[in-house]
Length: 307
Ligand SMILES: Nc1ncnc2c1ncn2[C@@H]1O[C@H](COP(=O)(O)OP(=O)(O)OP(=O)(O)O)[C@@H](O)[C@H]1O
Ligand SMILES: [Mg+2]
Image (cartoon, rainbow, N blue to C red):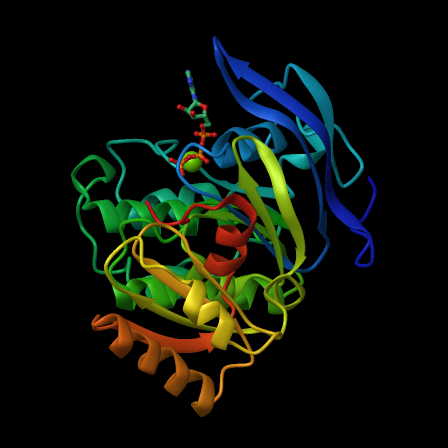
């Protein structure tokens, strides 16, 4: 069996196409997942994230294109013990409780994680309900624990923190970071840019079944800064554009959300608020900060990432 090459690609995806009837869910999607890092597939609802990971997990076949996982076809038997999977829905026996489920799963693996430690980290040690009766967040935590209990080389997490409260979310993020520290390759899907920004070394931005941008997170966001505010839609930006330095730009995307990009200093902030005053509008939710993945998505698609 090939051993994971820490410098190589854990997953290579090439030209995936998949249609569900008339819906072209994947439209020629290609990317690679470097070994030993956290890669986020980031995109809005319906972008094709789950379809993509299900193909990588060997659960679904594309109409065309190819996937290699550790240089093997994704449905290879050899991969089963090495790849952990957290599905967006289901995959766990409805009548089982958390700890027995984890103990049962752990027996299938040569070097499982310590079940009590894992359950404690995710707050599952005090959950007594069967899977069927667990809350949404508890189900998510158990699904995450099931995906990693076998100490996989590679783990696919489909929206790992969906439905979790903020505290549990942090515990889940810590666990994912711990996996990376242990050399595990993590592929996660999310539509939450803060999750991608916090966790991902690499981001693959997906929209309408295509990759619109991919690369290391900090390279995608760059060093630029953004000033954002909301105001009445449709303001005439021409006077503001004339006053802005040549290195800055301003856009209204989507309607009523204004973004000034460039070097954001006190003078530029004063210039923008003065222009607002001249227009007789109060800028609301005004903030300044580094360019985020949300800004990258907006620049590339003209739409907001958040639903
Ligand atoms: N079994 C199916 N039958 C028909 N259409 C489907 C099926 N599964 C997915 N789709 C469609 O394919 C597209 C991609 O779906 P997919 O679940 O891969 O998106 P996603 O990025 O995971 O979205 P989400 O963020 O909502 O989980 C969507 O338009 C969805 O409605
Ligand atoms: Mg999905």
